[in-house]
Image (tube, rainbow, N blue to C red; front, side):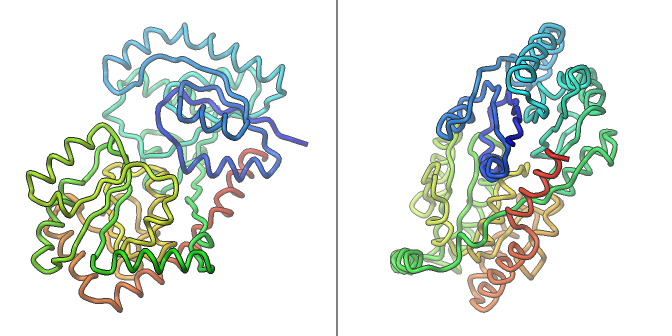
Length: 378
């Protein structure tokens, strides 16, 4: 018997990693419905032939002004969301709702309690207390009493506990990747040979980044320029798109490295890019589920990974075993690590092999899906 689950998202994030998880969960007798203002998510649901309906809970809460406006409209949005959820409970027999964005989270606790619906909050990144005005932070904590929170990183979980969310309410579910997707077959070997033939004259540093978010690309550009003295055949490939793309391209010209840096935009098939990289560098300043999953995919492709220090990556990027953790804003330090790996082929291969094994042993997508499925159905 199918278990109807309502997903609510009033935000703008793409949730690519979450969509992969939902795909797997749909194979475990979960039937998903979407209530959202997120065009990307709505289009993805349409492609999967999952039912969707629009939702409007106001502007993104990215400033104290927008947060204050939302707070003034709170008692308008609360009954509005209540009756929308009630329809799903009566018409679709929905017993579980999953909230993705902050706005519906601060509304949903009381609704779930009154309607006796299981409430799950997906927390894809670490909360930053100073970015939230006090009344909304209080509402978040108050509504969390009725919710089960899912976090994907110990550092993110500690962030929730630091704002007084009870530890027993937060389930740590480690992110996962399908390492088998990078295991050799005849087709992959042909593609790999062609790509290696094309890229063999280059040592390629790669990164996947949302160019609408805070990132460390300027420091990475500095590292590329510094490394050229030792690695003249160096290039950087930036996978991702966003509002800052043009300004970053201008910056590479200003730094006189525009002939070494390639912006290739959004890519549906990441595998073909990852297998052409020699090193993967995590460039996001604020790690979320998507960036954690990209790191695991890079490790599955047997790439050494360089990531940010003090971001909760210690179990994924094990120092000098699967990669290295550094202060990513330090271009000189990053350059030293790139040069170190490029100069030592044996180290590069060993880091990649260890990383792939770490994903297989500890970060399988199947394990992630099973844990979330248990939370939904328990």
